[in-house]
Length: 112
Image (cartoon, rainbow, N blue to C red):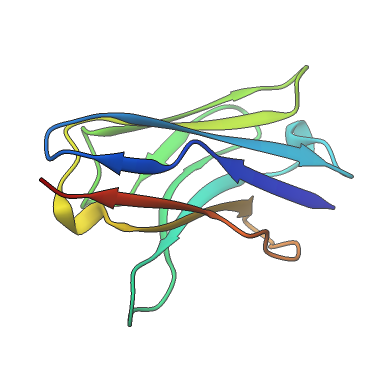
């Protein structure tokens, strides 16, 4: 299984970014998929997830600002991040709830 996250970059506070995750070796329709992030010096934390039925859940820190979605035919998972804050700065990863080997992640930096 390979999980390739992309779409990160530098954004200003209040700005937006859209992350993409290309999944191969398994099908997302059979997995609860999620986005995770790890800030420097901190443990990896869950940000958002989407169930097999398509129900999203969010961490309190991002609720109302981030939106997780998926493209089942394309085997892709997305994270739309709006109203970004400096504390959102981290490396973002996608994975299943029962995790596969972690991919490289994509860096998100929020700074003015």
